[in-house]
Image (cartoon, rainbow, N blue to C red):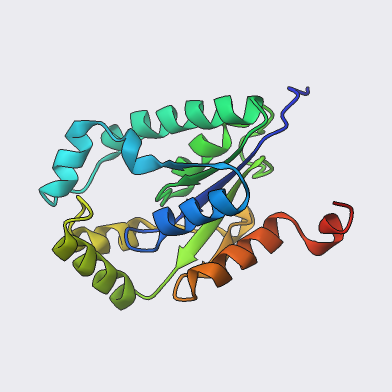
Length: 189
């Protein structure tokens, strides 16, 4: 079954403070695509919970992820290159996002929706969150970081590409670009 998909979706994932928005925006601009920040799709009730330091439950997350899935599917079917900045902490959450590809066979991990994990030590992440909170730039307090780290679940079979989030943003963009478009594919451009 083919659906005529021409688009590509890359989910820049990780816990709060990893750099999802910064890297996602830069990568989208570099690749002439669009950037979607999953935080923008949270209902107000989710944002209020996080602001109060209350971790989200699956009942909070699943409808939000399904909205993101629908948005990704529209972009893929339209042939767009889209970058989504989303925590996507657990395999079942990523499977919802992978299912934006109408051809996705659940459990196969073969999808046009690809995942990049921005990985950094907890102390680096905490420092970034504290800086953003002091600047008034984010609604999620640093005290929720540990709950996100506890939820983070990576299965090597998923083929998630891990990038060191302590590298410079330009280096991270270059590494991700080379992963999406390996050099043997670039030479024909």
